[in-house]
Amino acid sequence: MVELKATLTESGVLYLPQALREGYGKSRRLRILSNACSALLIPDSVDYEDALGSLHVIQADLEHRIYLEKKRKGRTE
Image (cartoon, rainbow, N blue to C red; front, side):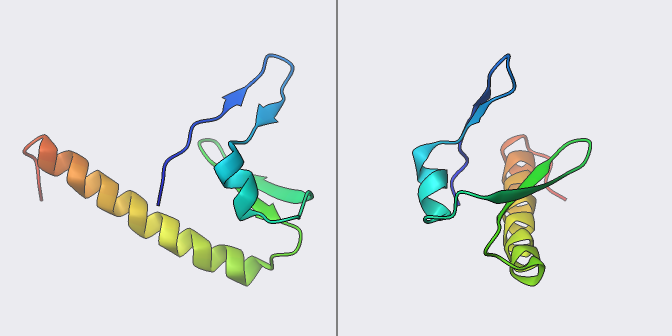
């Protein structure tokens, strides 16, 4: 999994990197679910169960990144 950066303009426009846009195929309509510190972009063609499955993959990746970060800092648990 690759971490990509995006910029939100002052007018509120978010430009998604090409690699991310390509992953959504031809779907140009997205649903956005957000809370205080993250957001989920879901193409209209994807159902919530598939989105949840993808979130499990992202969660595992985040947990691994946290582990590696702690290991680099000498704080593995």
